[in-house]
Length: 478
Ligand SMILES: Cc1ncc(COP(=O)(O)O)c(C=O)c1O
Image (cartoon, rainbow, N blue to C red; front, side):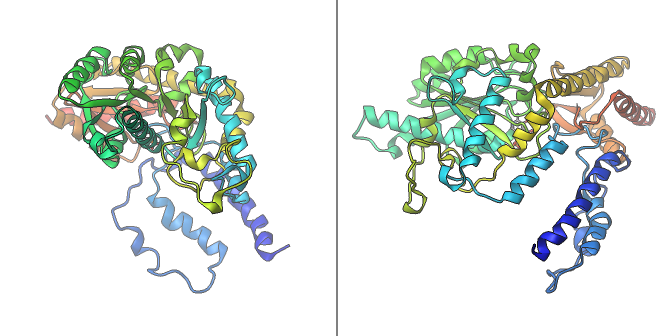
């Protein structure tokens, strides 16, 4: 036994105890770090040590210098962004992945890495009710892969759609090359899509139109149809639509049925970004929101949001794996192996070559909770959002500005934007709870998201009391 593993046995046990203590007492910590930029460089040396530091000293520093600068996303008083997946089964799965330390860019590089991923992503697809065309075990060429993030999944889908469209045009018009086609290509998304969608277009050098959403903040078919007609009349080539289920700003849902019918008719790749909302489809009662998903070319959601899986774990499915594999096929000698072609080599399904054994944490979560406990988690988060909704509705100074479907409530004082911004600033400065601002159709709103897995009704009540008393003070000085 090496001295490194000997130490690891002892330190590892201490670390697990430490993490368990951190989780059990997280409520005592402020949800938003209360430090100023540059705080850390004043507390740690400006060069790495030449000789090993002591484990005990490192652990003391974690509490002394690191924790003050950590925002505690798992605190039940953290109501910002969207839930960041977290659970002990997931941490254990990641520990094992790090312990094994393999890189599964091709099947042969670590067969279990590719095979477990293929199987659990199929499990997941079935569990959220995706059409069987997206599954590896389905009768077609479908399949799924784990990407690092929804942003990556959108970018990769957009780039794959671009290459597919170029291939199709060049087959019809062989005298052209891709640089004749590219300037004509155009993609679409809505004004409620996550910023990563617009950024994917920037990264892919693709022209993208941002379409106005309707009064329920949904992208609708008639808007898309009209703009496509206009663009085609200008000689442009529509090829990609990114629809969102569960938008970041207000958790609205694009109308997949309407958009999908148009995309099918126009031979457009429809990518569905369900980063946050995807987990909810574990529960059959939310699957009405998936209507029209059969038209999607690719579908993505983040188990690393509401599904209790730690970052990073973003599942992407396609109906035809060739769309991804042929997009950027490179086959260097040093990565060839004898089973090539008969097995999946996931490096073709993503941007980097190297990839971690991420399916382990997903497998652990699915097995140690089972679908039923994950469904209960979703239902609890949604119920808490409705509990909060009731409290807000009891105060006539406030209004709710989104339709509450999952764990997000957007509120505002029926006052100016300035006052709403001041309210948010004071809430976050209080260190008691943490919320985020958004703007909906030009109006400032405060997003209240149900995040931590340990959040209960008493925390919702607490948060409301904090918001209300800060609003009391603010309004009394007006
Ligand atoms: C709808 C939506 N899409 C994409 C993202 C980006 O997710 P990721 O951090 O996995 O790239 C988010 C993040 O909250 C989101 O809400």
